[in-house]
Image (cartoon, rainbow, N blue to C red; front, side):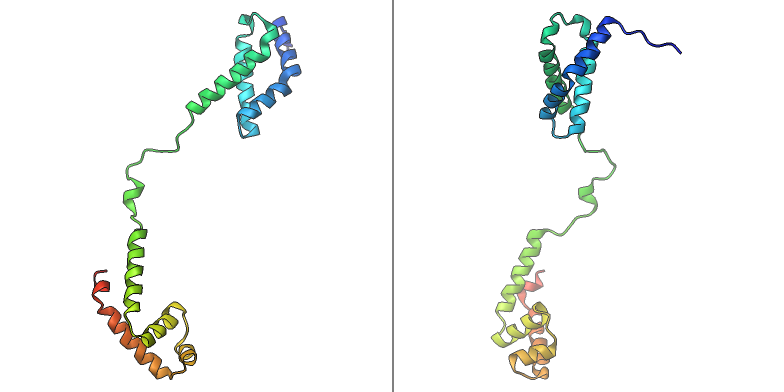
Length: 170
């Protein structure tokens, strides 16, 4: 196996990267949010610098050249950023329509308005039974009436709600 021969330019570049690598990595980290992306950015910028090594006349200004390469590479990545949209046969919006929140709120408002039109005793029993989820016995105890009164009053209230003209529209 033969050992690759390093040219003077390769040795200069290697020594430059070893000396200035940590400083350049800090610059790359300031350009990206993710440390792994910063390492990839620096590696890309150094590869571009290596390809242009022979054309760089002033090796004293290498830091500026690499920094400019970092910024330009990051800008190119930002401009070419991947869009998370994929073409498909069926649009997801049209396949499964969900309930309209405004419609749901309108129904809820209409129901509360209809409940508000019930007599106070029936309204209290409907709210306790169906909104507070109390049993008939608990509702009767809370209101100080018999269980039969709760059953009959809630039944009459439900008949009124089922025939309410505003609720029939829904």
